[in-house]
Image 1 (tube, rainbow, N blue to C red):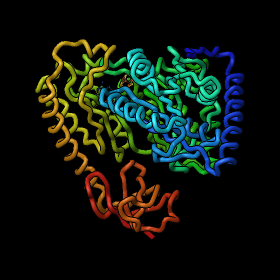
Image 2 (cartoon, rainbow, N blue to C red; image 1 turned 135 degrees about the horizontal axis):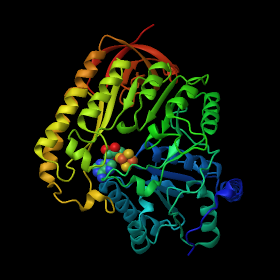
Image 3 (cartoon, protein in one colour; image 1 turned 60 degrees about the vertical axis):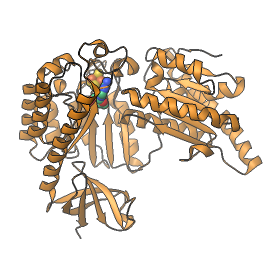
Image 4 (cartoon, rainbow, N blue to C red; image 1 turned 120 degrees about the horizontal axis):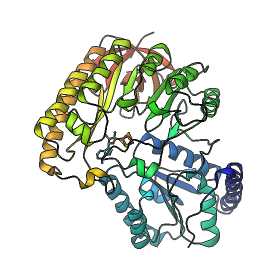
Length: 478
Ligand code: 5AD
Ligand code: SF4
């Protein structure tokens, strides 16, 4: 059985060349298969978790298509099945085990399919042990630091028949020049940094994605210029904590400076980014957001809890008051901004009073969207061994109350949009009603309106007619 391999940072180009060669070899094998059978081999990819993972999957999809595989949404007809996993909450992990169990039987009947798993879950020793023991049907296992190696790992597996485990314990050099396949051709994600140094006490991410590493501004700008040439209009800059972008570069650059540079790129019309940690959100960034016409007036600013005591236990390093002050400052500079957030309910030690502080923040800020989570114990994090874990029934009851507050806030925000004209980037034909189109406003609200599919990919003015709380109904302005 093949085991962990380590790449030296000096070998960047050599490593990429290895992948190119593996891609060519596999492509030749797949072309021959197509000649013989008249069919193309297919891949299925399941992506769990955050936008970072979704973007990794876009890169993996590109590699698979270069190797001659065709995408399918039907797992049962795939020759190559890939699960890109998430471990931020326990239920995501359980889902993966359940699906792997099902695949076991499936592979007994279809011996030729290959199964690969990657992503954050694979960076945990306990997971690898369980896979080795229980899921011998898996062919390739790799982690978060070496996704670029998929072609090489696939080739080694084809040549040896061995199960390949290639999990690195730490990051290597950032690999550049990666292409991706996007579901929406005119919207693209761009990694600006990897990893996280914050160690919030509940969070597993720093353990599975490593320390912060920023890409060089010139690499980011070149990638975005290339995307603009391909017709991309909207970009989403990705990082676990974009506000600390550039601190570890040889020539430090701030995130605000980066935004100003990206704002100059012709062809790009909208710039979004996530995620911002409140403790690092500088005035300089607020001014850059205010000044840059392409940077959307929308900000994802996770609060996690409204109680200073809980925030301290979470190691968030801001207080309720500081968060609210920050929100005020942002709203003062950018009056029409909309904010979204992440909130965790049931963190160890959370009292009813603490929870009421969270509801108070929700009511005071008025989020246009809030991602609400029930606290999930992650082994290896400081919070997992804290006393006073909250019983499920208490958490569930608080969670429901939180949703009521969130929804009532969202409804109020949506109501303010009725009667206004919003610029909507049209994304697709509405899935429920073919006569309607679906798109997003600059401030990220979902809008459905009647229109011709020719408009897909364009930014068009739409008058908002109806508030459906989580989406809006509009009418195109001619
Ligand atoms: N339990 C519940 N939610 C979590 N998050 C991160 N770790 C946990 C956990 N252990 C949430 C946070 C974060 C979002 C991406 O996921 O709210 O902002
Ligand atoms: Fe996790 Fe906190 Fe880092 Fe976000 S900032 S990834 S919540 S440790």
